[in-house]
Length: 253
Image (tube, rainbow, N blue to C red):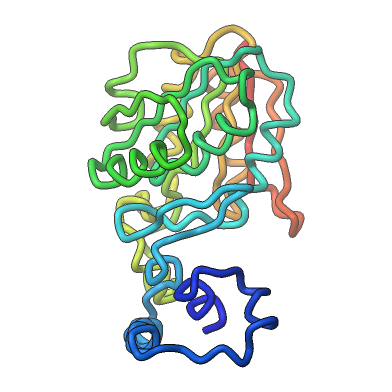
């Protein structure tokens, strides 16, 4: 509720503590009542406020793409610690709202030579384009099923692909199911797209290029095996802040 009030007033949450005595006009109260009703129906706060903070930036957020999770910010931090070819050509596969690629481009600055954002969903790409414009990032957006329409090679490929098994649907929190299904589920074991991605990605990596993924809590070693089978080297798995091996990394020899 504090976050909804702060957004309605155009201030930060902490600023509420300096303005407790400020009365809300009728329009603001009516808007907040409607938002509270939506929240009671398990609509995610990010969809209600239409915004999410990721890294140092603010992104538009709605039903068109997956709501970014805090773990994905950890993947950004992990990638920035790697020895990359600079300036790097960067590809974000299954980009959704664009948080991974756009944040890395902003943070790397002149060390990012080119950014390509690819997704199968035209709706997700439209949201990504909104965020690209808002952040002032130069990028190419491509509608592509994984690498199907990708023709160039890159120094860094990042991806946060769907990794939930179909059988896990009933166990998910109601808020999660407001995300697009195609951004959540990937076959009976959750690994269908990660198998395909791992097999195809070496063809699109330059020599010395890096691939960095976010996967499910119990999929790190399995996906590392996919990448190894595809011929990639220097394979490692980064942990998230809870110590879960969630971020497989691999390099093109």
